[in-house]
Amino acid sequence: MEGEILTYFKGYSPEVLLIALGSFILTYIVKKPIKMATNDLKENIREVVNVLIMFIPLILSFLATLFYNGIVTGEWLSLRVIDDALTSWLLSLTLYAIISKTLILLIGLKSGKITINSTETKEILTDINKTVKIAKKISSKDKRELKNIAKKIKTLISSRDLLLKDSNNIDLTKVSVLNQEIKELQNQEKEIKNNLNI
Image (cartoon, rainbow, N blue to C red; front, side, top):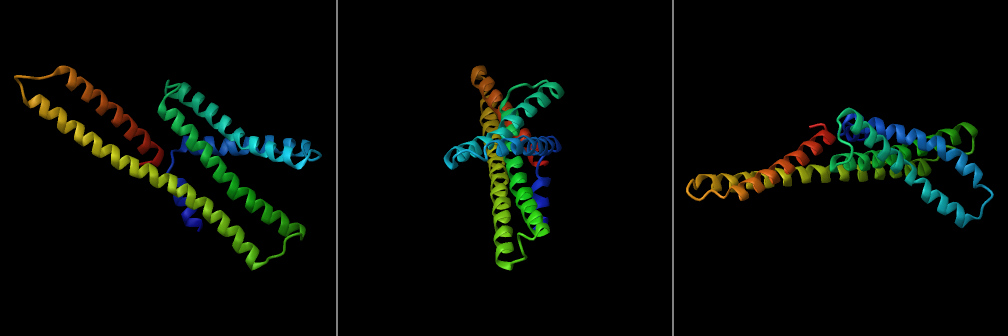
C-alpha cells in the first residue's frame, strides 16, 4: 500500500504538492483552536462547524495557487489556476485523511487507549486505502481527459488541413476558429500533463 500512496503523489507537480501540504498544515493549525472552542456547543452546531472546517483548505489552496501563479507565471486567474487549486485542495484532504488517521492510531497506541486489534487496524488501513483509491480515480480521470483532448486536437488539425488544401476557397475565418480551438486544447493538454508530471 505504501507504494500505491507514493505512486499517487508522484503524479502531481511539486507546486501543487507543496500548496496541498501547506494547506493541510495550516488547516491543522487553525482547526485545533476552533475545535477546542466548540467543545461546549451542541452536537448539531459542532457538526456544522466541522463541515465548514473542510472549506478552510479550499480557501487556502485557492489563495496560495492564485498568488503563486500570479507572481511566478503572471497568470492570475485561468482554468489552469482553478484546476491546480482544486487539485491542491483534494490532495490536502487526502493528506489530512491519511495523516490524521495515522496520528490517531499512534497517539492511541502510545496512551494505551488503543490496543493492537487486528480487526480495528485492518479497518483503519482499509479506510486509508479507500482514500488513496478515490484519489487515484481523480488521476485516472485526468489521464482519460488527456487522451480525449489529444483525439480532438488531431481531428481539428485534420479539418484545418482539409480547409487549407482547397486553395481556391480558403475560409480564413474557419481556419482562424480552428487554430484558436487547437491552441486552447493544446493549453489544456499542457496543464493536465503538468499536473500529472508527464
